[in-house]
Length: 178
Image (cartoon, helix red, strand yellow):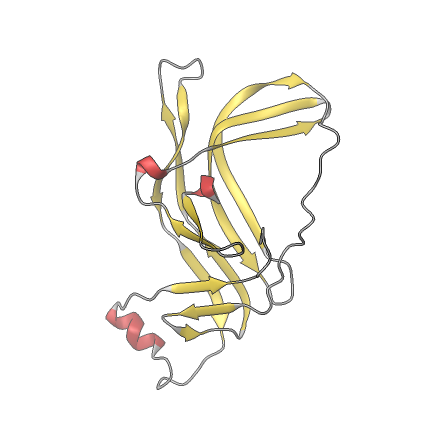
């Protein structure tokens, strides 16, 4: 998520907090390589939008869409001897999910779209005339369908009409790497 205009802070061996990057100097890019049909395809200076999607009991998924600088493909076989991550993806279960401090654990779907507007920074001194991708703006959206509670417990509509900001906190997992 770091190349999606996020910053990771490790608080303990299993606690990593992701927060939004707000300054240009804190942005980080990534180089991505894909081997297909005996060719290595690379994009450098990439940034991404990310959507975190889940349904109860199913593995959580992160969908990435981004852009970067295309590097001319080369003939190269896929690497061998790679050790893949053995930690299994987290399921959307046993989650702490609050909006404005109120638990919203009973829901049927969850989608957090960071809404990153990714642009390419030009550089006429570079052979590609591009420097790297960058995060230009953000319009995050949260789609979920929490079970309704009484207005006295959580006046969602009153807060909405008053324009009351509410923090969204989503905690899942307790295994290093998840």
